[in-house]
Image (cartoon, rainbow, N blue to C red):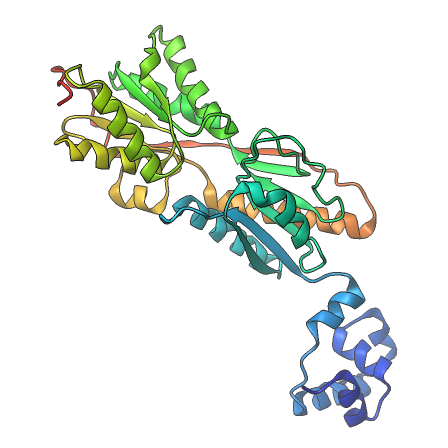
Length: 350
């Protein structure tokens, strides 16, 4: 590959002049227009391309950001894909390269994340970290980091999320307003901040309506279709011969898809026999037109990059970041065909 020295030699100028002209640096104003055009013409003839590593060393910027996520599950993660779409859009707008750093489990985070902060990226966006201890002293202070839907234990510089408690409250209140009274809640994993908040919102809506939720009508599982299917199968098996709930309120769209699969596995039809609502509004939920809570997933990804660029620039200037540390975006109810309204005749669980 042709080097900067080759371009300078071809144009008959010094390496410093060639560098200034090609980089558009402030020093390039001391290079005449005629000389600059001669340097650019020489670079074009030689098919010269700047060395990204050398430029990163010079400007202490790689113009690359990292996106860290746990993608250990075998099933497609539609939540990840929609947020990642927003991250890519934000990075494109900011003229940044995006590098994906997958984890096979959050237990890898204390070793894996610091290893990524070795100068290959200017900052990190970390999606939905779920840590089981609070020993986060391993977080590298020299690399700006923005989390999306962080758990309770991780304290990054800025966190972006949707209003989970408001979402759980709104969808439960909507279902109660349609006349449903016996609603099974299949929430996400215990101690996951977002999952807990959605269940809390579900319970608050019932409390305000003066409706008691039976203790066995709130169950928890992973944010996956497999988790939803397994939880629903076990619940149906343990409640055979009892009245079927009128509806199921799920902690994610993936959980809802799994619940639908389990219900159909015992001969029940959604929404003919039982209604269902999800949470996320992913592509598949939109395609199947199920009722759900819309999180602005694309906007969360885009906003995370926007804030990350502010953190990177503040660090470059040696200034403190002056923006908010918690950014909470609003949710919206999507009225799909999976919530047609309550039924007068209860069914029995087969």
